[in-house]
Length: 256
Image (cartoon, rainbow, N blue to C red):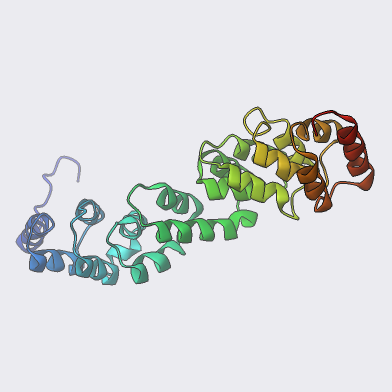
């Protein structure tokens, strides 16, 4: 009832909590193992424990066996993100995460590279099943690999947002524009983008696509030696009429 004093917790519960609070900060492996295996380990205590970068592998494995702790989403994410978590623990956990937890793992400093790759791969595999709003957020905030994958999104807003992602690299943009899935919207957006359209290797990649306009193609050939230009066009998917026009212009221009 309102106004009644709170009932004190049983002394055994207080004792266990007190022990756990001591154990999670201990330098003894035995104490840490006891805490990791304790079924009463709470979310707050588990997260405090997982903030320790010095946790031994066997302690992390013990947390992974703690069924009650592993029911807690934040604990699973913290465990998979721990720099010493063994791969047989972290990688299967990563595959269970929601989209934004996967993004968090991929962007967390200290997470091993192969775990980040596993998180990115799991997220790429789900991109077609998540909402437009989620894809827009991932395009803006996700890793470079996620932004690169979202350049091929069928929604123009997602593609444009991905082009602005600060983690996106030239290599990833080149891979996207050369993909068979790349459409005219992506090629045109990249060819006019203030950041990307001046990159020489990217211009060469765009010249190999089928959707580049004649005006941009002529601009992008400036400064490319004629032998190299012929080689580029030989493997290009541009329409023949555009290739022929480019070669005529190039041969008529001094300096090629």
